[in-house]
Length: 416
Ligand SMILES: Cc1cc2nc3c(=O)[nH]c(=O)nc-3n(C[C@H](O)[C@H](O)[C@H](O)COP(=O)(O)OP(=O)(O)OC[C@H]3O[C@@H](n4cnc5c(N)ncnc54)[C@H](O)[C@@H]3O)c2cc1C
Image (cartoon, rainbow, N blue to C red; front, top):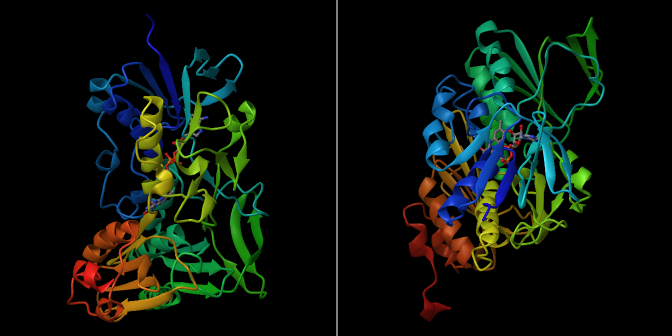
């Protein structure tokens, strides 16, 4: 009997976890993992804007798995090999001049950085940060000094700002919103981050848009803001979000939603035998209150494990649809950890004083916690992840006291 074949397109957090989880679930078919990137081994993406960018970790140190892992698990890893075409009827793909058929296809194609309009034709000085090669180009600025303008005060932009200003660059961040990270953070913590960046010397301009980007012979020279301000710069990092890579999904005619490939709670797309996971997928999430494309390592790995279980016929395995979203960001010595999704209408309880050491902010719907945001309070983050997911109820009068462990703030059965 011939072995079944699972082809996985994209070898990052989602793709590699899916391959690993297939083997853990006892899948004994052929697994082939395609990576369009030239990097010899798939790697952790978050350090690109953190420890790797700061020169604290090497490419080897951020590898997801060593080469031995792929060999030991009989996972065929093809790096530098882009899948160019897929054929739903023939259940085959084309990559590296070869046609390969699948029994199961997993799309883990991730996302690409959203481009800034008006930058077409600029060949030098325009940066994005999505992969190792991007990070290497940006990192080189640390030795050169000078000015870096960052379009977008999101997590990636702010992490790079922190690293670059500490490396001696002049850093200017431009964001159209009046509040930093407005959709991701409660206002108190957003204000804390803003104050910290400004204290470190980052020039943050809120409520401003880049209206024009000026280049000479393809080389970036200047940007203009919508208030008429002109800023000379030879380097601009565009960090204004990302869009899912959907080219292969479009060739297969897959249904999409919310900018991602629409999948059910097991990661199945609208085409039989084709799954989608990670940044390219849109799935129902009970904490998001509907379909969402959640871009995080947590979502990518949880979805990958669920898909591997489904491929192995274990539909009763935990679904990523029921997983609490969580995320983190490192800026200076601040480790920001978030569990759940922010809700502006929720009641907030602050534990500790923001700006004055570790603190956590809990968002509550009556006595149930819906989200937590911790700065240098890893214990609060870890416990709140579990407790939010369980729907635990809390004595709100205790939550604000940093001396009382979160687990001790729960309401006892007798009190509920
Ligand atoms: C700089 C940066 C910092 C981040 N920091 C954090 C963080 O602190 N915490 C957090 O939770 N998340 C963070 N994220 C987000 C997180 O990295 C992503 O959510 C995660 O990488 C998604 O994994 P993925 O496997 O779905 O997709 P991706 O990581 O985007 O990988 C997709 C891969 O598929 C490949 N591919 C695409 N099309 C093809 C094709 N046709 N053929 C072959 N290969 C293909 C791509 O080249 C890529 O290698 C960060 C992201 C970036 C860019």
